[in-house]
Length: 292
Image (cartoon, rainbow, N blue to C red; front, side, top):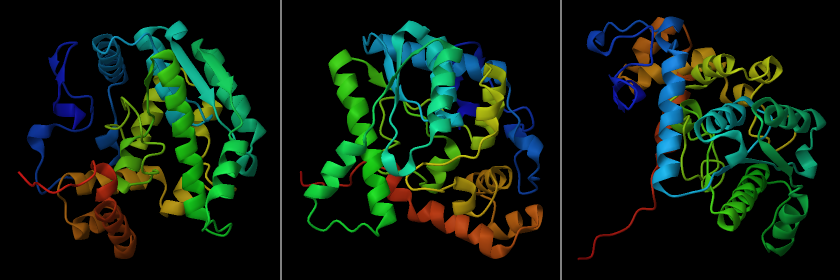
């Protein structure tokens, strides 16, 4: 938990306003106040983390994908504040099946707001070339094909990183991480991941503090792997509810307690719990066997 890590900006501090770790007990009440954060402290700690890591690695700057969504917008904002806008390169990587002019405009708005350079790369030819060379390609396998798009964006980001000696900054949040709601070796693939200890609802709080344009803060989140995909619809809960379910699971609450606290159906909470457990492999490095 970020709330118990050492901070370089003033010792051990909590970023949570509504929760005291020392009061954690079986009587934990799942209310929205639990997930309120201290935005100034959160910004300081994240920017210090980015700045220190970039310095220790001797990198001249960072590169990140900017989709026009809230997570990548916040990652861009904290990166610009950490190392300076001139040392941040953003890549907008649309592709033909999910091409959305508004998302492209929103990516441009993020770059303009935080003063960073943005390049747009249409990855459609790269994705099509991969599909054309895969003998078992199936146009109807939406998930497998969508994951190719996410992994192709990773390939492009790391090509730029190799050419510029930049580090890749990721934009996955804790909600997505706990659920495994990301492409393995795709959108979670990065050198540093500054938002992975913030739930989606907390990322929204930080976004407002950082000055991310309101239209981006309020838009529906999507991995953008196929047309019409939205995260909340796919997950079956809005993020305000989902984050409280995840908070409860993270702090060892039984599913039955969470159902009681949030007045959700047992099936919904169980589905979230099962998804977290089933995606454990996505959060770990490759497994191996010890032979020595």
